[in-house]
Length: 321
Image: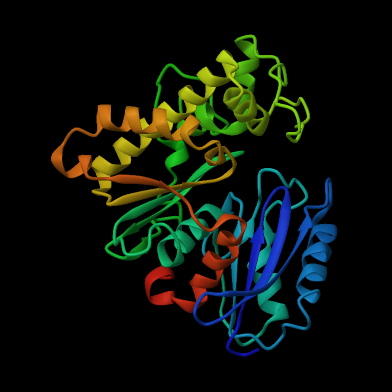
């Protein structure tokens, strides 16, 4: 076990834990739904029970953690937006107490997804990439010169708060027109409803899985694929916003590749076609026109693989002040 890393992925809808080998291969993993409305200790007990389910992983080389934010970094007090039971919860410290004598490191979950795609996924081979997540929120991680860029507080690469429309909708951060405000799944569904979208109004086809008629990003993508004009317009709205943000990031950082994952990315061409169109309209300089945007490869395993990278490949991915 001592050559394995314990990886932990903390999200608003699920907790995941796994054992990762020295080559970054996920050996085993367990997942559980995040306890709804759980207080601090109930959430902690859910996590420790998940870890115990891996089979006494006490003798490990280290512990890597990806968590939704905000958090204090690198000390690791976490306050995930969708988990009110944890406010300034000392997650890294509590895990360090349980696993003494080995490194215990934490970063934002979107950063861990970027690490995974850079080391083992669609960004492999690039020294300059941005890994993005477009889902309930929009986040990212930035690799330049082959190394993770943290910034002063660990938030470098947070493309969700690049402004794509100064007159756009208010954002949860207090600003207006941020990419996250426009393109995150719940916000996009709200916009579509305001334009007259009725979730589930389009038939999904005989024999196909019938998704519940709920106003969310997944339902929106399904209706867009079935030809609903308002749902289709919403996907164009999201794709163009993401493309504009990527153009700005590419001009700033001289990127080779951008990987895009998360729930909304599963819409495929409905998102990526307007994304590409907007990107090529705005990325007109020779150096920026070469950027490639590709779907992320690693799916639900990415968070664990990236969290393990904080331990397994610390020279590239762990350099806090």
